Image (cartoon, rainbow, N blue to C red; front, side, top):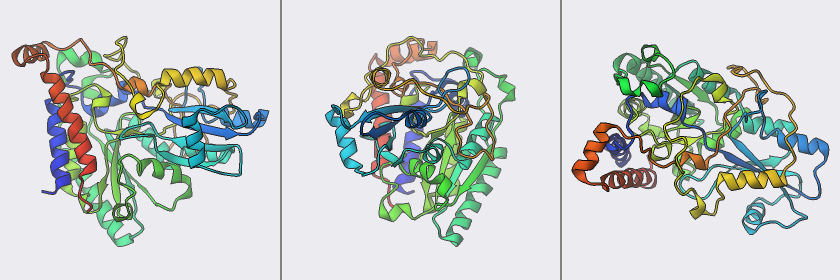
Length: 413
């Protein structure tokens, strides 16, 4: 067994052992109903005041649906370079120099370290559309909304024979797993966390194949290549990749080259269709992607378990402001968004062009790191009583350590 397979298996076992806030609802469904996507940040650098037209385009990076809620997990910050610029923001600009202004730099939420740049370019409507949406993302979103458990994105390497063989392995195994895997029996006490009838859930997988040279998918591809810290390494980037996407557009991790194998595909699928052993999103593997979908408008959800509880410390250790701080700065620095076109809630199509027509939830990325709920089950209380109050923190530490080890020590196949 390779180190990557061992690490992945260990991660799943340890995650399953974390009973602090366990739930018998399948991971894919719990994530769809409860896990709000982390926000990306779009920095719009300009010199002097933005024109009215430029303000409208900048605001379209943070579109609103008809009910006034956010339609994409994106925060926009406009930065006038002629004014006082904070050192950390100036560092971002210095790392992305351009004679053209306004100039947009889009960065991912911090996961394994400081935010990563997933796109940069001129501020115009075509570029905004490319960042917010793409045909492949529309397809993924529609399938998840329609009830598919997991949608796998397959990135071609450009080597046709190798790509075709790997894609066949993926699709054949997914078809087999639809018949082989079984959903967990949902306990009566967990029905409150499920907004649909338990017997309506199903196991369904599909795959979306993307050409690396597809111009419409470049921003999406760049996001996918940032979900792990080494996917752009020279000995990895030119291999085919298969990435399972679930919930509200959350990528689990990447299977690479020969790692696109039946046993590894099964491990990921078992985890995502199994019981959600830890309902706190931040304690689970995965990275959110930009999706221009208002999930709350297309999915009936129950109240989240951790609502009203104070959040744990966020990403301040990486020099990144909490979302509450970002929103406060946004309110002070940005004009009220000027909307152009919005779609009816839920109108996501497989053939939708990247025009920002679908709508998404307005949430805080830092809110994804939440305090463990005090509403633990009696079983958890019994475990805590038997092993001491610190056992859950030890388990949590092991889970996080294993996630990091999985990313850092994966062999290059």
